[in-house]
Length: 204
Image 1 (cartoon, rainbow, N blue to C red):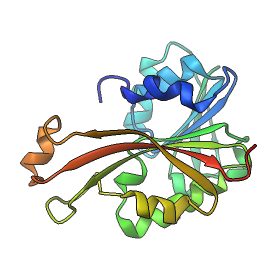
Image 2 (tube, rainbow, N blue to C red):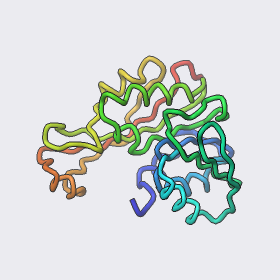
Image 3 (cartoon, rainbow, N blue to C red):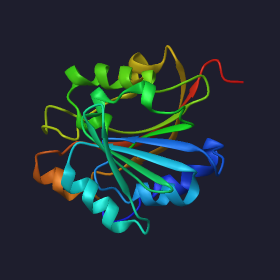
Image 4 (cartoon, rainbow, N blue to C red):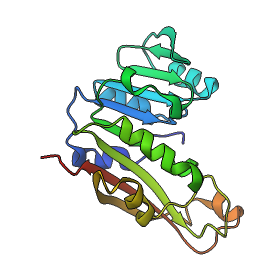
């Protein structure tokens, strides 16, 4: 997207996130959401395997970056933003400080069903007793269109995260008419976008 994801600022007040919060963004790509989050939080950590996408984010950010390598990743750090260039599945949890929010925008739905369990387990590994998760999903007839993005319904999301988190749907919208490129790929019946807030079951 060439803009900040519209529901992000609209839903922000539901998260009870402090200005000094730490936010982790898996499979972040070159999303402008990173810069929006950096303006509203303490530190944002993006994880992305594409060097081109990481470079694009740094070019858009008005801070200087220091470069280092560790644990198989190339890491770029500025005052408000950390970019870990490498495979999210291999991100060392003991090198990432406790996160207040994990922002999964178009991340888990970029993966086919056989890879989503591993992704969910990694997110849970990176969570603690106070970490919230914001997840965007799409629901559609998978037989009409190949992913990505893949269809992920609420039942599967609860199967992946429900043992650790309470799920609340904050946003639901039909996107079939807006996202014409999916129609061109064969989608014809429905396309529902949802955003879920996950809060730890033992929180408060």
